[in-house]
Image (cartoon, rainbow, N blue to C red; front, side, top):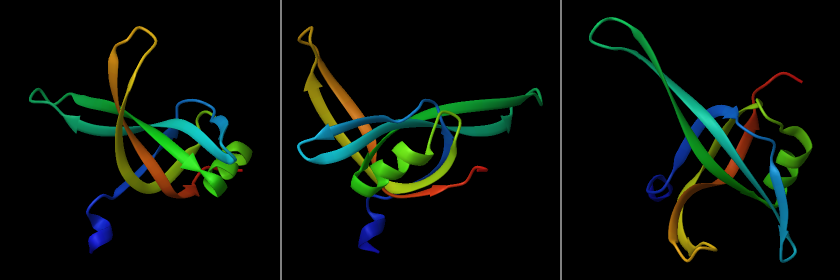
Length: 110
């Protein structure tokens, strides 16, 4: 049960092509996926909400993203939430929450 303390599972579609970089001697991919929630409001109208999630994939998962994923691809991921902060070029402190992906499953058609 200890691995459930910080666990995220999502299914969604990529909003962009993977951004691949080499950090040190390690490959890293940055992508974002959209997840959708549907519900009906008090007037009975169907509402669709989209949320965007920033993902970080390292090593083998980054190589899979680079080779097989592109904008619109449907994937399932499992990972953990990670928060960090940095100071941008303007001197403003920024906070970022990302999902560091442990497992990725390709769901779309070939």
